[in-house]
Length: 106
Length: 116
Image (cartoon, rainbow over all chains, first blue to last red; front, side, top):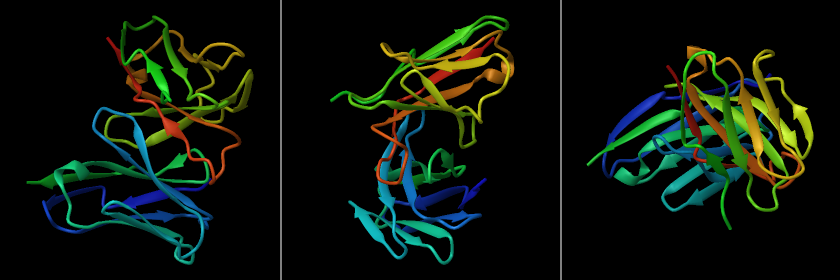
């Protein structure tokens, strides 16, 4: 089965700093979802990437899919406390990475 | 348009009791997925159902766990004779059709099950 590995597992950044979260697949990625989970709540869909080289943005969050590397990256520009939470990548259906826990210090 | 509704949000049971978790999918969604999340861990797929059918239950323990999605009413995840290890957050998600990259799943806020 396809395994997704996220890095880093946790991240603490100062407000205003940029950051990147990576998601690497053990198998070829034909597409990928990114979700955000606030502590104690459900998952919020952020974006979906389908094509190699595709890049999408949602407010200050940008995600790319690199099929050759079987990897996707999620980049947050000028982080805010509201960005804090757990970011999860998901591939095909029903498979998720373990998540990256983001803390943004004011 | 209401999102995926799960209830209860919190459920406390004693060892040996039964736990019933309910999930009402988004309006127009006929596919339901159940996941379990242990503290500090990611989401683990349990079961995927379409109305009145179990499509994939490969992630569900063979004993004590069962799921249904009747023609009318919410999907139910049932855990019999609960044990301490069943303590977790259980999330439900729904999608309008066959799971694919064109139809992301929408998640409920989860049910946090605690076993005393």
